[in-house]
Length: 323
Image (cartoon, rainbow, N blue to C red; front, side, top):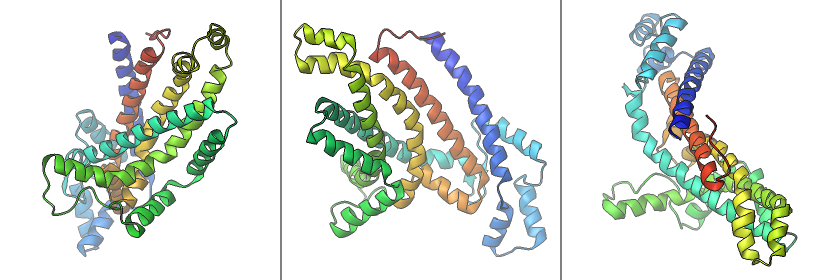
């Protein structure tokens, strides 16, 4: 196990390095000059002022020099300096990261639990009205754009019904502490977490249903039925446990996409996470912040993939870790 984790971590470092180089290249090929943006916001767009800004932030250096400087800093977890926010990018991201992790992990739990349960129910009642209703709702949520679903949820539950707060991380000026503050944050998180999770719930539901129907036709399941085992026992111990393997694989891949989906969700619900931070940085041409968010997102995806590989052994002991 230790050797497996060590090898995967070494591979992850090289993958992360390749991602850094690719992202740095793509960002600097994009149109727009951050120095011109900052000069325009300062109300002084003359050439000398722009040149001074470019020299101050190293934007006048050759591309290869800028890349090498950034890579050296990134390997030391120094993600540079934010032109717009006037503070280190690492500090800026660390301030926003807990909110994003809270939102994405909640959405991930909602999507996996609801998706698996709905898939099990649909597979167990194949051809019934339960199967039809669950499959219809899964297709509906999968086909609906995430930003539209977020806007409609905010409009219905916050504006029309006034059941849930539609925007923000917590009640501004309330001064809550302890459990009262945690409950307030949870209250604000219901809409964005549920909205973000519903799209992925549909994916897990369809995967679980399909996988369970395939496993239920295998010989060892027929043997279990012939022995007279209870239907619920066969469903839990024989069908579901084997059907979860592709679901876990998909969940590991989709975990990174949830971080990407958080960009839209955080923007619509004014959630102060790194997704909204990246959206603001794109509008402001703040290259270092954009690259920093990409760096953290890529690291999270690699971490989720490692956790997924380790979960395989827990779900199916027949699987042995490859060296």
